[in-house]
Image 1 (cartoon, helix red, strand yellow):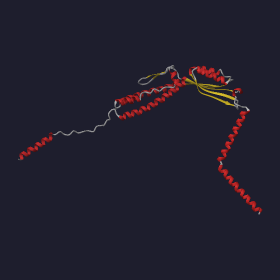
Image 2 (cartoon, rainbow, N blue to C red):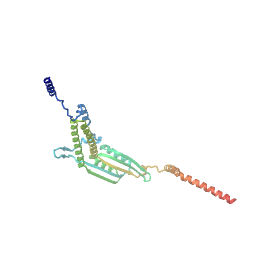
Image 3 (cartoon, helix red, strand yellow):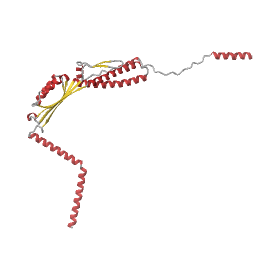
Image 4 (cartoon, helix red, strand yellow):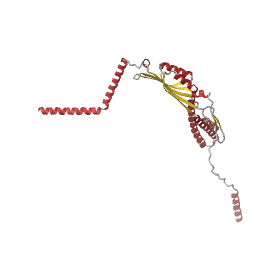
Length: 305
């Protein structure tokens, strides 16, 4: 009996050893699955390189002007500039015999030379017997001198004429280089966006692309504004006359009577609103006057008694 018990115990030990050990599970880093291809394509399209359109005038003349060329390298960038960037602006003030005819000639010449007026104002000063026009115009740089000569030809007496020329070639090159560098940086982040596997990486890249896009649009706007200044010169024109027939400011009796009545009504309004503003003092004065009057009346009554 003892022998069978020992054999049974050994059999149980052997069966226990032959059983498989449970597999151990190690905790690995949990990685989010890669976004679907459609989501990546959508995000890439969202951050596609921008097409920033310049103003209509700039776009029209950009086709004529040859832009600077940028040749990239490993260590440095070589810039080849074909045209200088010159900003020309000025102002002229003069007297003319007929301001209406002078304005007509200026506007006709401006239209023929491809320019336009940004501001056109007229002022009449009856006290100084002066009628004046002020024009702020933009003219293609190639036609600036021709237009200035035509304007000067309409003057009977030039009071002032100033022309200023500014070379912005270096500033233009620097701005263009910054724009190209930011565009290249955006391309690199777009490539990273296509290869990103984690959602957090996608969000970080998206935030960076938004920042780069804002810088690109700002730099492009600066470049467009500078190009417009280069291709369209500005000129401030002031011309006037002192001839009574052209001024016609209304210096007759009827005009003076109308102005006198208007000024009198304005003065009456000022007095009325002024009294309303000091109403506490008016009431206090009336009360004091009433008390003093009653006191004097009572004194007289006592004196008569």
